[in-house]
Image (cartoon, rainbow, N blue to C red; front, side):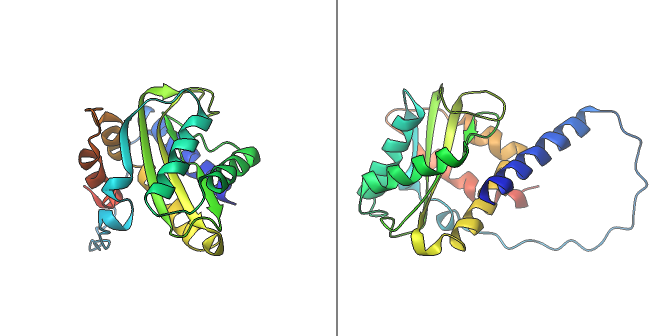
Length: 200
């Protein structure tokens, strides 16, 4: 089910990108309805600045996932890094979480995770060996960490929000364009998570 959400989201994006490239007849304008502004989510509701790492260099997918697992324990999000790592690998064994254009959305569901959270890691050179839909290396991994008891609720809500954000072309460009200023510059990245789908 989770893999289906990601696959449909990115195939929808791919279709829309192809549609933009193709010439189209001018549509007949319909009467404009009153705009309803979507409620804006605070960035803190999605990802915390201390959970963003933008100047990393990983030799492999597993090294990236191990880094995330250890950071989760350091942040008090999880109690056992090995258990979190095993949960990440178990999910990858079901089907890769590598997407398109340098993005991946790994997720771990485990009782060792005590707080639902998102950890973002950015590798400017790209993580190779991570199967992706377009064969490109992964530059940005948006890792979801979900307590076992919330696997069917919080997990899907956060996953849907991430998938929606990645449908936004400006959002993807902004995330990938954050410079890797040593040691890290997470504050430059965190604000873009504030409900990018509502931006004009």
